Each structure stands twice: as structure tokens, then as C-alpha cells.
Length: 391
View 1 (tube, rainbow, N blue to C red):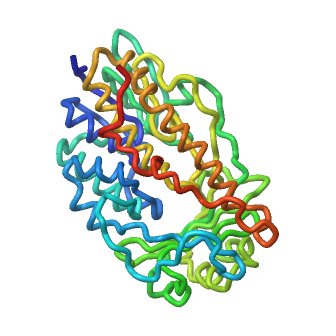
View 2 (cartoon, rainbow, N blue to C red; view 1 turned 30 degrees about the vertical axis):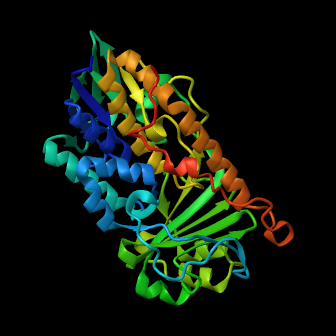
View 3 (cartoon, rainbow, N blue to C red; view 1 turned 180 degrees about the vertical axis):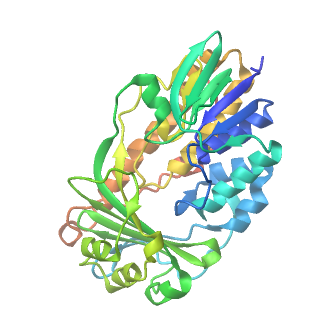
């Protein structure tokens, strides 16, 4: 028998909004609480896996998603100095568009706006901003969230979708800080007109260097170039997870890369260039406590080397609604949800670690690429609407 009731979601990111949309479709009254005061354009380009894209299309979002995204082209993995092809293929023409049969690149802010509009179309009051979680209490079959602004909200269950630095996780299991993964990332968005002189090798190129990678591809119909550089580092001294960066320090980190890479970095708009440390956590034995459940990066953060972090958060939201449709109670259903998802997210987590090891070869001049980047199609075609649920 399906479960009924009110559900509070902490975090209005991709996982939280997908969960809200899927749960609303199952008849739940949902309220999403976000600590930010304004939901604006944040993030950069991300990959939308075929399974995640097709699942969102089933909620009626297909036309908007297709219009806002581009099919992922063949990706060329090249030597950082020479641009010599090491793996993959150059794709210098627009790839054929097979809809959601293939992965797609999309600006995170565009995907977020599509999800937010869909949630608000179902309930204009569903998303509450300016609510930073401070406390949780569970009594009498209700979970009460207390916020820094003095507000409190009670629901029949609460979902923590608030990222790798999850306040819900902290309140559930105590003082367990995320661990620095020894990686620092830079990212920015460059207008296509400024980037054009440095895109001669195709639509999507990953330059592989000594303990560093530089990845770039086009988004927003080709109007923007998404740039991300990731470098191994011994320490991250910044307080925030994301801080402004300078072109000079980005150039210094990748000073010996090909002139096309350096040319792109030099075009980075100061207002959009940021850096952040990558953080990880050990897998949790349990993702839930009573009527409180963690999803997305709050439950299973992972490194970005496969580009499936957003997809797994979206999958979580959709699978959660499927599990709750079965019933019979929140506590049992949350355990079933973890059983349904654990093997999948662990495969992606470990695959991301391995991919990083492969494409951050210590010395590509000496070692080349001992292994090819992952071509494991099952990781990318996982379908959250069809994946089996535990009996």
C-alpha cells in the first residue's frame, strides 16, 4: 500500500528538486527548504546521462531539456603538451542528435531552472529559500526541522539533499567532516566567440598531464565553452567550498600545457572563474535514521571524473518515489531505497576513482595511457524508472 503524508526536503539542488517533482507526482505534499536566499545561476556544465535524461523526460520535461542541452560528442583525450591523441576521437563537427539515447551536456543552471519551474508549476509555494537548517527532532511519527531564521517545519519524513557538506548528515551522525581528496579544481565559462581560436581540435577535448587534467566542451547551443581544470594538491587552505580564482593562478597551475589550453585560460572571465577543493567521505553503513533519509552527495559523494554525480542524484529522487509508492512505512521504505541504490552508487563511486587514476597518469610522457578511459556503458545507461526494486 503506498505511503501518504507530508515530506520536507532540505536542499533545492538537482537531487532535491527531482525528488520533490517525483514525490509530488505520487501525491505527497512536499516542501523544499534551501539555505540560499536567492536561487540564481550557479555551477557550470554537467553531463546528463541517457537514463537520467529519459527519466526526467517522462515527467514532461523532454522538450525543455532537449532545447537546453547538446549531445555529448566524441571526446578526444590528448597529450597535455602536444595535443597528440591518446584515446577517444576528435569530433570537429556537430554530433548527430539522438535525443536521450546518448548522454547530453547541459549548463547546470539551465537544468536547475527547468526542474524548479516544474516543481513550482505543481505547487507555487513548494520551495522556501533563506532556511538554513540548525536542528532536527523526531517525535510521535513527525520530523521537525528548526532553521536559523527562527522558523520550524514538521513533516511525516525528511530528506537530506543538501550536498557533500550536508547539515542533515551532520545532525544524524555527528561530527564527521568530509576529507580533502587531494584535488583542486578550477572552472569557468567562456563565450564561444572568445574561445573560438583555441577550439581547433573539436567540440570536446580532455588534455591529460602529469597529475592534472584540463577538460573543455561547448554548452548552451554552442554559445559557451565549459572549462574545468583539476590538479592534484597536498592541501586546500580555503574556508569555503568554492572561492574566486585569478587567471594568473590558473595559468600557473597549467603553465606547461598546450598553447590552446593556455589561450583558453587567458580568456576566462574574472567574474566566473572559481576554484574549489574536492572532498570525499567514506560510504555510510546506513543512509537513514528513523524517518530521515540522505540522498545524492549527502549520502554518497563521489569524485567528478566520470561526470555522473548529477545523474546519480537525479536517479535517487526518482527511485525514492518508486520505493515509497510500494509502502508500507517510511522507515522500512528508506531501508529498501538504500538496498535498491547502494550497488549502483558504489559502482559509480569506484569507477570515478579509477577514471581519475587513469586520466591523471603520473607522467604521460613516460607512461602514455596504460588504460583507456572507462567505456562501461552500463554506468551511463542505468534507467531509474526501470531498475529493479528489492522484493
